[in-house]
Structures are given as C-alpha cells and as structure tokens.
Image (cartoon, rainbow, N blue to C red):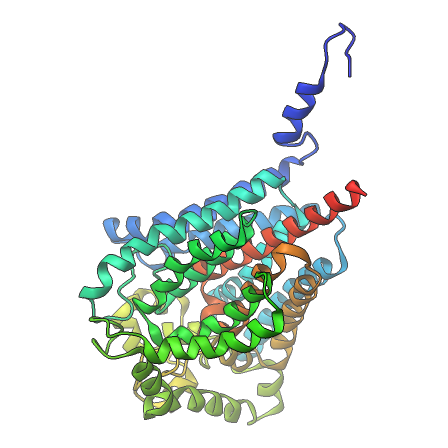
Length: 453
C-alpha cells in the first residue's frame, strides 16, 4: 500500500496492529491498569504491611483498585453478550440484597459493604475484563503476571516447608492471607501456563509440576481441591478424554496415600499426607464443618424472615464471622478489624462453642454456609445467578483454552464449598482474571479461524 509520497505504509500498519489499538477507549485503558495495580498490590502489600506494621485494611487496597475498574466500565455501560449482561445484573441484585438484609437485621453499614466487596469481587473483575476487553498483548500481560507471582511464591514455600510445623507458614507470599492459599497460587500458576499455552502441551505439563508440588510441601489436607483441576485440565491432553477422566482420580488418591514422609508438613510434622486427610475427615474435628451447616440451617428455619433474608452479615459461618470471633481476632487479625466493622460474635459460631480444629475440613467456616446463612435465599439467589452466568460463559469455550478455563471455574466453585475462598480477594482476583483472559483468548481464536475461512 502506497501513501501520497509514494512510500509504503505496511510497516506502520503492522506497528499499530501490534501496539495498542487506536480505538481502545480511554476508560477501558484506565480500567485495565487499575486491574494491573490490583495484581501488583497483592504481590507487594504483605511485605509492606510487615515492614510498616499495617493491618488487614492496608492489604485490601486491591479491592479498591478492582472495584474502581468495574465502576468505570459500568458507568460507560456498553452493550455486552447475554451472559455478561446477566452477570452485571446479578452483581447489582446482590448489592441490593445486601442492603435489604442489612436494614432488616440491623447490620452495620460497614459490614454490608465489606460483605458485598468480598463476595462479589471476582464477579466484578470478570465482568470488567469482558465489558472492556484489552488487546491481545495486554491479556497475555495479565496472565504472565499471575504466572510470575505463582513462581515467586514457589521457592519461598520450597525453602521454608522443611522447617515449619505451621500449615499457614506461607504468610508473606502474595497469596499468604489465609490457610492454604499456596494452593491457589499453584492452581493459578498452572492455569496461567495453560492459557499462555500457546506452547507444546508436554512442556506445559512439565512447567506445571513444580507449582502443584507446592501443595504437598504445605497444607496437604486440602489436596482434594486439586481434583476438579485435574479433571478440568485433562481434556487438553492428547489422550482419550474418558480414559483420563477415569484414571485421574485414582492417580490422585494413590499420590496422597503413597506420598513420602516430609518433615514439617502441616501441623502434624512428619506424618504422611494420607494420615492428615484421615484425621481431618474422620476424627471429631472433621465433624465441625457439618455442625456449622446444621446450626446455620436450624437458625434459618426459625422464621420466614430468617429464611428469606438470612441472619445478617457476619452471623453465620462466612469470613466475616471470623472477624467477630474473639479467639481469632486476638490471634490473627487484631481486635481493631472486628471493632471497626462493628461485628459481634457470630451467632452460629457462638452456638457451636470453642473451635476444635483449624484445617479447611476441620472447622465450621465455609463461603457457601456464610452466604446462605448471612443473606438467606434472596441474597444467595442473586449470587448464584452470577455464578450461573459465569458457567454459561465457560461452557461455550472451545479449543485449546477450554481445559484451563473450566478447571479454574471448577476450582473456584469447589473451594467455596469447602472453605472461605469465595471471600478472599487475593485468590479470587487471580482466578477471575485468568478466567476472563481465557475467555478473551478463546474468542480471539474463533475470530482468527473464521477470518481464515
């Protein structure tokens, strides 16, 4: 192609195509860099907090960045695909349900805001990425950052595991804000490897192994959470899907049972992983999870109002219930957090009495139980509509990104059932960004294929 002076413009066109597109709206650019800022804050804030003696709220600036990005995109409110529009509607409905429940139960406004910000955060992040899709290279930047953070934490875990008897020793790593977050780092890293997956599949598996091994260096009682990841990633391999889906669970169980003795593993140093799983599930401590659900259900059944609108934020077995638990306040969070929110002792936790265990399977805390218990059917329905819209999006993914994207969705869902991971922004930020990146990459693959035809 020639310009008026007779010079070719091909090089200029290629440069524009490889850089930021001229039609990338300014608000979308700001939203994208706010998401990057949120990721970077997750990486650096634990160290800054330790150096400066700052508390939990200092670590939660990632929420501010993420919600600011969503607000900018939502204000512009351009048209979107049906599942994305449903996702945004679910976020709004969930906020209204939070307010309604808070007013009826007399929950402090700060608690309502905190509960909404924590639960709806991954929904808002995913909606932001899909409503304001960044260019392909910027999508890969997000994926690469998550992968980099995962590998940053791995050597820390590998170096400290043999000398620790505390399952939560990974504090100070970018996901070190609650028990077992090293697992989220491993899974996020594996997801990033597969999404960057434009590399050979065998090499992708080999690069994934070190991150997955971090699970066995630390909190092995949560190893069952890897099952949906194994099942989700397996279709991406060049083997018969039905064979992989059958043997993957068997291999995982064998790996747990036959794992060697690792000094310092979890809080039962030197025991095999299989023994830890047995302790968490079979011994009395493991019944605490069931008791939490039962006690929550009994409290909801006391009246139609409880059933519809819940017990109020922080009154059942979610993350906010921990902030009102005096035993945990003094040990981990500092009394100022619960006092600032105006939280009292969780009604359900108070009924259950002193805690017996601290592992994911051995205490009462659960995002699912906290969601239903705090907000009842109305708030839960709004949230699950949002999850349904995400499922609608993920089911439509085809091609090489399918296994990774759907595995991340399964992982997020499974861990919310087990523990309080739906309310942990350091985890959900990475998972939501990777799901959004996978959806955008899959969409671009379809567009390239259609253009080739």
